[in-house]
Image 1 (cartoon, rainbow, N blue to C red):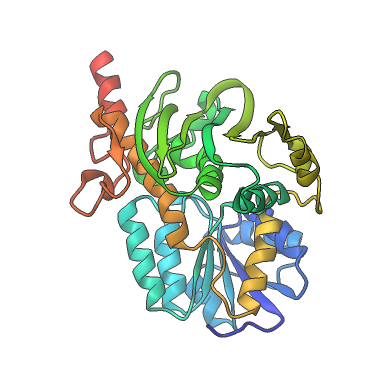
Image 2 (tube, rainbow, N blue to C red):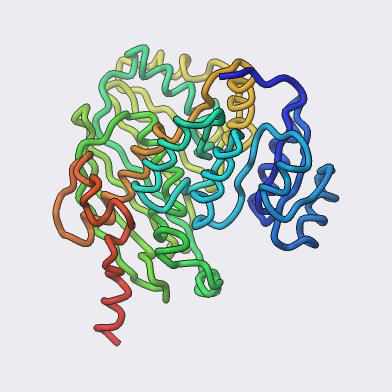
Length: 368
């Protein structure tokens, strides 16, 4: 892969709320030029460009690419457009960063992998919780063996979204968002769990529409067995008045806990050593405190592009996380345990997260 020299020229596709997080993070990186703001709404693109000192605006990615050199595209649009925009960026030989979820199905993820293999560009997926110093430190301690084997875990994303949130026309639709809190909210937290504890093996799950008028679920709960033998529970909710993102990982030699809401620093982590393992507390306190977030991920991404390496959190890396989301839906609808690798090309949940069944929409109709 060719090394990118300074300045690294960035295009933003979509200039709504999340694009501001990308712009703020990129402004913190040296040698980066915010080159073009792309939006179907010209006024919104212009306002974004003025706010973040972006050099020009455009109405499409093709128009932006025709107006001058680009290196990196930040895709900050609603979920249903992530996949086609990523394909377009790759067809132009550009690198692209995709907000979560990177696609709406495992089938689309496979197609992105194939398109990337044929392109001079690369894809990376926004899973920024992997990049805080707490996660990196925990991963290092795991690899050193001092924590012992992973045993039991809890991974909860308990958030609150009122009905007005779902009344926005594109929200809560399978063909636009790909799912409810399992795909759009809790995915960040259980991606971190998988990043730390490695491949999952099988899952049994329940999901339903308990309190909101929406086509998708508003809560799901899963029990996951990892290839290591460890067991974890995962709850994803947008109907929980006391909001928290909480993860507890019990190892042989310590319990490690993380509680935050939308991002963490070292102060959000707690380590409780097992009796006789008190020195682990000292090992944990070493190193710089780096908050999770877009800035931390972009720092790693830009460093890799300048070195001519593939950026972190590739589509292949993200596939295991998306596959777990698909398996949670498949298990909750079928009532059976789903193994990793079971959702393959002929499987109905390979091309849509609801298996083309719209299960809770049907349930609502029956109960009406």
